[in-house]
Amino acid sequence: MQAVDERKSGLQNLTAEASLLGCLIANPDALDQVTEHIGAGDFANPRNSAIYSAVCMAAIEDTTGLSAIIEQLRKDGALSHISENYLHQLVGVACSTDEIRQTVAIILDLARKREKVAAATSIIDSVTNGHDETIAFDRLLDAQDRQVTNGDGFADLEGTMKQIISGNYKKTEPTILRRSDGEFLLYAGKLNWLSAPPEAMKSFTALLASVQMMQEGKPVVYVDFEDDASTICERLYKVAVGQQLESAEELVMTWTSGPLYADGSRDRSRALFHYIAAGRAFDMKMRSLVLKAIKNGAQLVTIDGCATALAHANLDENSNSDVNTWISAVSYPLTSAGAAVLIIDHVTKSSAPSLGGSSARYARGAGSKLAAVSGAALSFDVKEAGSVHTEARIEISVSKDRPGRIHVSKRSGKRIAGVLISQPMTGGREGVKLVVHPVEEISQLAEQKRFDLVAAEHIYKLLQEVGPSTKTGVNDLLKERAKSKGTKGFRTETLVAATKFLIDNGYVRCEKEGRFDNLYPLTEYKSSYGDIHADDVKESPF
Image (tube, rainbow, N blue to C red; front, side):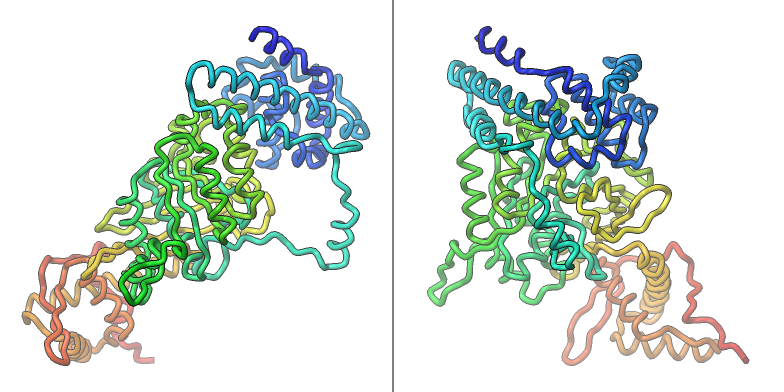
């Protein structure tokens, strides 16, 4: 075993690593030439790996120069292991931009050889100690596949560039997780990341994206390291009800179990929602199941619980090398097969937002998580915590947008992709109405909500005074009172929304009696906005 480790340690060229890093620090524009070909895990020296991650992170934040790299290393907690003098030395040995390709090819070739040695060592350890060797075999196969190509290792871009110039190039646009205005937040065929604190409706959001795809007849896969089948089924049903889909009950049964035949049986082979309760590492058997689903049309794979998944694989989420290993074994085969992958993760505890606090930018653990994203990385900031009975409001910001096609609004230095509004529905059947709104809609919605709730208080007070009444009777009485006061009265759409709010949230009971809907007051409702309404003010004499 010692001989194997010695061979691995000999497969490095620290001069090449230092000269490349020095070039990237001194010439920030050179980073665009290498990010598609080399990752932090390709550096043999851990210090160099951390510096490369810091260079990439600084570039994402649009900061450049040695001082920006130093600050990024400080944020990552790596500066204590890397002297500023060493960083200055790197700049002094920087290669020229003309030498970048050759230097990258050297580093990649040695990295692939080290991967093979490490994978072989891991297999020996796993077999010897009786552990699950599937991840180790995955690593070896991956190292076999990712060889440096002939020549300088870089792709021939002539054909692609000609398509772009001629206008025939198909732009990479987000097509998953639709906003209310028809724009999208996630990319098909790419690795996407969702980082959020607990109780931020992460899995509900992933299920919303799944429901939107299944409505179009597209299968999805949900690999669950966090909950169980009953929890996910309940949430899936609530999301379907909240979308106000016709025959939601039969729809979710068809999605999860296949279409219903006349004899009462279901064709499970035609189900659209494929669920895996992952109580073990994401091994080759699990991957083959997911790949089979992708082959049969699945276009979105959600992996819920990054930290737990890494723990099952005996990997450290704080290690760039381990994170790269896991992503190589889990995500890359799925995106290569054509599916979008959405990984759900937690944010760092030190920067996780409190209610109403600022958004945390980073996923918890190694910086390689964000660096590996080929689609979009989203961060959730809980502005209003919700529950089964209360509304939630969550701000969605873009931490990384690799293709650069998500429509955002810039505010306080953040790129806001939308605001997720979660509204509980309790009338008859429980549901969760989830809508991702563009920022521009939110102020308008807030104003409308205020008016609706004020009107709801007026309706409840009236029912307390006169007792149970029909919807039409309530509306007529409110109009009479407005007329006697010389005010305009409430608009019909405001009354409809206010009445629905009272019913859905259990303040009023609605019973059908013949042709009439009778309203019965149950629990007193008082608006936090007072009882003055813009629709119920005196008419202007002018």
